[in-house]
Length: 320
Image 1 (cartoon, helix red, strand yellow):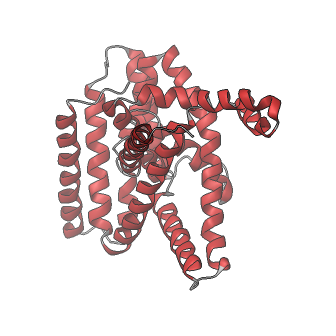
Image 2: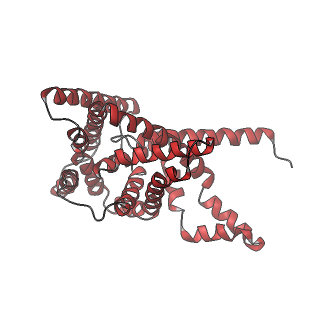
Image 3: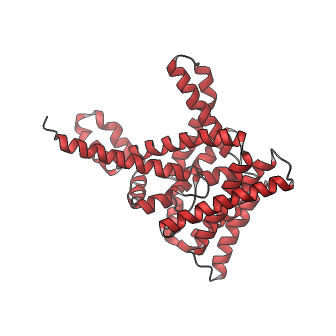
């Protein structure tokens, strides 16, 4: 019973601090052009994040699940500590909180002010590409090839020239795998991947609908049926995200260790090629008149200025 009150307070403050980290990281990843991985670098917990994610292995999960047996509890406790769940859980809750809040805002703005929203996103993405390319070398044909390949691939996907495999749940699952993998990479935003795949607004609205239906269900004014549709979408996306976290993210990390500069240039090329992607959302709602073009450019400038300002305050973004 000798749990010290002061120790308990310190632990609680530590949990709140990690939760705040999650809020910052989730906010960044919910906005295209701003990377949660970059936020993790700036706040000084990127190394711990990668170590904890890398420690999420099936073997350790089995050890934890066997913890109900008295002779396995010691190993289960060790596995929990190795996976650093006391860090990952509050961080994840903070990220989910931020994404949920921003998803509602994005869903509302996409309906009421699509030109402002997607013009702003275009500026964020373009400025982030400039900032990241500025920090990387383009001194050889291999560098130019890597950057060019990423740019052309993203342009092809954004324009519909390259069709991704599958649709419906398959595409949602793939979107989750790619977006969550991007979340832990400095310079690449999970929201950017979703915009590139054409799933950003849809997933924002589905998450908002799911949370709204859950709130109504808890208050007694909703129905289970109303939560099933959007809830299924969220579950499929999260399942894909978990797979991406334990597979694709590791592949990218290995590529960074093996060929750091070409891999980073390819990833930043993906950002550069994604610049026109938000404009498709505007084109679906409006004819490209002079007024619409002018307003889009104005909001893009606002987004670019915001990103450049963040870059200046942070002292420059170094994509790990």
